[in-house]
Image 1 (cartoon, one colour):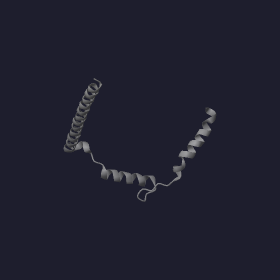
Image 2 (cartoon, rainbow, N blue to C red):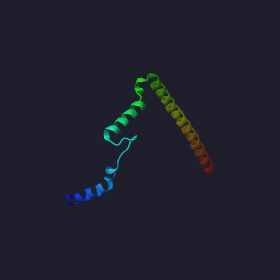
Image 3 (cartoon, helix red, strand yellow):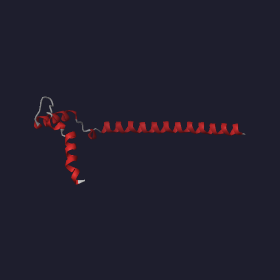
Image 4 (cartoon, helix red, strand yellow):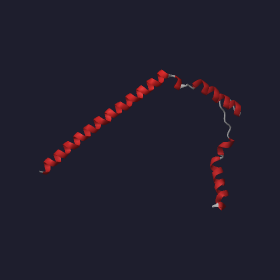
Length: 98
């Protein structure tokens, strides 16, 4: 295994080091501080502290609970329908074999 390690790293580097030499441009910035500042500026504009919005949180939880209950009701109706069809098919099979 140790003898193959240099071969492994040559293969690894040939596949994954390709992108290291490509220049990254973000809003005309190519240096690390400029790119970092662009990201900071963007995320400071779009970031929203949703935990501080009690109304929004309650609306989300209420909507989520409604969807869960709706799905449970829907699943229950499907299971009831399948149960009825199974009973009907069992009765038909029993009637046809007698």
